[in-house]
Image 1 (cartoon, rainbow, N blue to C red):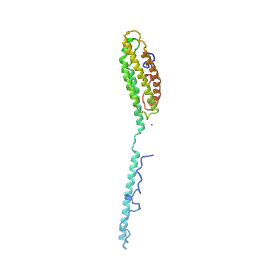
Image 2 (image 1 turned 45 degrees about the vertical axis):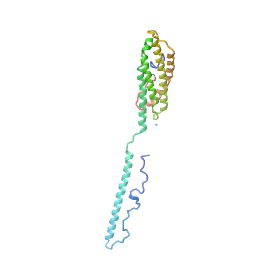
Image 3 (image 1 turned 180 degrees about the vertical axis):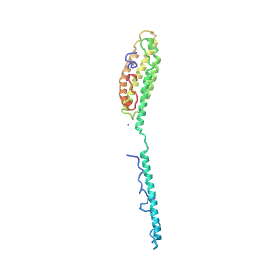
Image 4 (image 1 turned 90 degrees about the horizontal axis):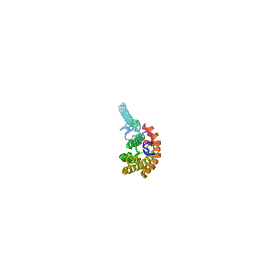
Length: 240
């Protein structure tokens, strides 16, 4: 394994119904008793007309009370239904989804590392690792694209986390491309079992890898509290 290559170690109550004129009285009535036709006519000595009028008044009052009660009940029931309707908290749900999306990108780093050659000493070792480096480059390109598209506005320090991920994957991609170029160059030399030469491409890989390390450490530092809040795994910086 080349020295310094990080594969080895490396966001009051429910809305009101609006103003209601004289609640409890339909049609805008504002009297205590609904008007009764012929209310000014004199009552008969026998009291028949008076009794009839009293019955009408009483009946009208009863109707008004029933209507008033129905309207108040409807208004109260509507407000109560709104007050007791369970409402999802978009902030919590959104944060959980965003955290899960970040976790998927971080998790893919471990898959990418599985394609790296386990031994890089001789020319034959390095030449055999060309296919693995090619796959890692493709994986890093995908991770970088996914990191750029992450929505993190509901996560604490989400913007910093995304920028750190982008920086880490950019440097890792640059390093893996340089390692690939090194492996391809060594394969072209056909130097067999001799120790693989550390060419300029290899030195470029080491330089890029040195920049990826601090960025990966920052990613892990920002990710840990988020992972803890959402019961998600944490990762070692040198396994990203």
